Length: 404
Image 1 (cartoon, helix red, strand yellow):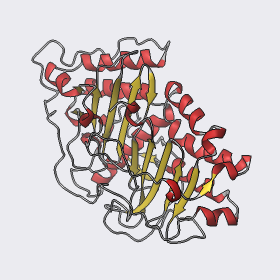
Image 2 (cartoon, one colour; image 1 turned 90 degrees about the horizontal axis):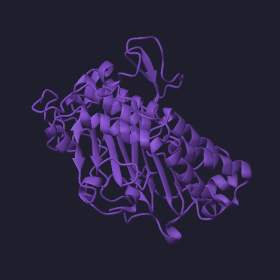
Image 3 (cartoon, helix red, strand yellow; image 1 turned 90 degrees about the vertical axis):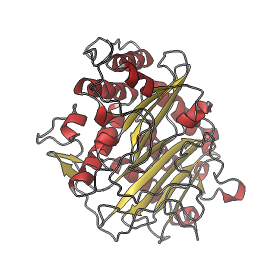
Image 4 (spheres, helix red, strand yellow; image 1 turned 60 degrees about the vertical axis):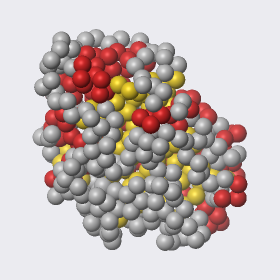
């Protein structure tokens, strides 16, 4: 499916840009590796299969065997009186465009821990739900309308940019395993304002896993990656998704004194990917977070107010991808005085004197009593002359809404 169809809400073919940037980067390259020396079970990105995994959805959008298929319900008014009410309305409007077969392939049982934990950073694996490349124009419009309410404008810009990046990889010869058509949407549980359910949207380099418990959202675990990480142009629009996230983490470390910077460096540690990566449908919570003396770095409570503000700003670049019913309680919990008294920031890489995001293996993280943020720079798989980003945002207590 071409980008102009997937990104219906973008002015395809116009001269407008979604993100204006000027950075261009160059470095050495190799295949995309996953899993550090201390990592366990994180999957690799370095595949170029010409197939796309499918968990049984490939019921075509042309399946019009019942009266619920592809009706133009996306124009139905959804009240904006509350974020959850509007989100559930949009979700129900999307469901109404689908055939019975498609609805059955979209919605999973909320108690299905395997479905909840089925997501990956790979371009060619089995995923939950409906492949967006199989949807009709009306259905796709309705699916994206759901995501526009589930995310803020900042978050939806990231979604658009990551989809565009995968189309860019196809354009430069990456193969049909890549591309925005190979992304999926699924509901774990029936969408509800008060009952518990989960929204999944993702594919290669993207996994939005948003669990709503009694109307409160937990958008974790959240995986985002992008190749290339530097700006790129496709269909006359320019993108640089995750630039803000990378820049915010770099600024956080650059705000340290020389002594603090040295303390933040993880001497002797090397990360080829994030430490706590995809769960790959294992139905369990991660158990490999650093504990005790392995929690290294600079303690945030020892920093000045100005330095702590940079930590808060870095956390906000992830959390503020979501509306107030999701973001507000998380930011309050992650950046409280009590939380910062048990939050460490640390980095690794080939140099202890600087953070170079153009260098393979450069790694940054925020490790709190709950929040876990990681960003790692890997050599490109398709764009061989520069690094690209892998990131993960998790909550040690509330991944999947603490509902596995």
